[in-house]
Length: 271
Length: 109
Image (cartoon, rainbow over all chains, first blue to last red):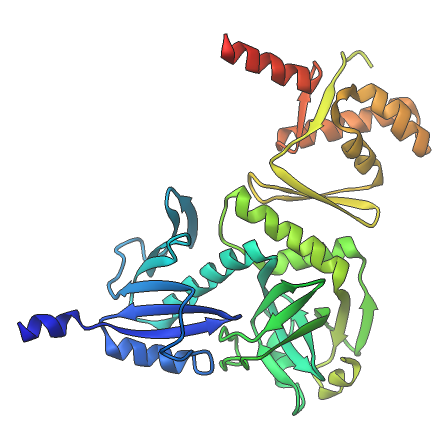
């Protein structure tokens, strides 16, 4: 009987990104420790209430390991699938179940999908962008892989809080937008600082022979922002609000093109 | 133009925003993003389902832009056909509201 009780023991960890606490439960204590390391700075107190709870079953989902991510709305919530995970999430019940291999990257992907769907309803989005807080104002640096997100993060002077070098978290707040730190790191391989600040400027990154900042017209800004927004779901109810958010964002937040050489002097032009 | 009347209406399965002189449209069906220039924006905004396309071209496009009626109609037809193929515009040879009402009547019969 004692063995049976031991087999039922569950462990959990609260991961809070963007002020949305998500608790994951697993029978594997070692996996919780892995997640505690992976999400350092984003782990909430055990006593804190969660917005959503996920049960994790650490088994390969049995689907094609090379399969691309798929996010589908179903009768009761959502199903997310990729080669290394399969998750079902019922936002109304605030519960979900994840079947995944025991690596934190699968967890990372599930969390990103959950946050994109949560943010879509709140007038926000995740975007391929580095972000940082300087003098109480947040700045986004958006661009595709190789555009310089990690470089600009590395060049940040002391006193600048790097929120992420890869995936930025943006949410509408009143008449403007706020950027939050995320644990989603790129080449910097370091979680961001878990702080937030009102957004001042979105810089669209380009590398060139000299540092310069240029205006970008709003339609072009919206096009480029949409190119960089992460979104996985395919249904109109979720896609169209993201489009609306991107258009609203460029109407409220300054968008500039930042061409820079990899030199810390670029930070003298920011802020 | 030898074509009969064509009526156009904006699909409800899209989101559209005017930014500067352009209109950006996202299809909810396949997440494709379209950008309309100023002339196309005038046609888009006039696409109420009840005004014939040739009237939109004459009273809106030719009135606002330096373009001949034939040229404007040719471009407008191409635009409408393309947006219609992508489900962004509904295109019909009868007023769209009337056509929809007729279909509803048929369903109810």
